Image 1 (cartoon, rainbow, N blue to C red):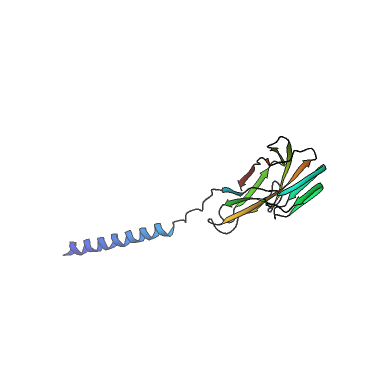
Image 2: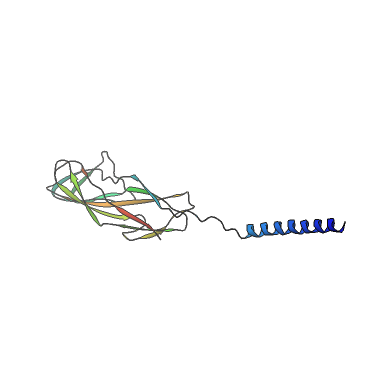
Length: 172
């Protein structure tokens, strides 16, 4: 009988030790780290709307807020397409910072020949080289609106001008 109670006591001690070890392993568990992947999706191209150029030309500016202005011999028309900033959607966990950088200018080319210069920026988060924190949690999208200024010479042929610009997004 003595040996039977010794085994019972041994198994009770072993069982309690196993439960204690399991509890310790759970108490030291760490939560999973949030994603660190930066995802950027362009959702809207910059549009300068319809305008007329005369004389020596001038500029057309679309701000990151969508406001459009002109200078020189440019007349803004209220026809389609309407002016709009470029929009990028950024997905990165809350509290992370994103640094944006881009070339200051790019050249757009026309279907009928000719070229015009586009000055890029500013953005709603600031000028080239700005850094900003992303919004909310890992599933929330932070929009970035980008404006620009067209420099149009009076000799530019009428028509549609196209081109592209690159923005680099780096997480900090």
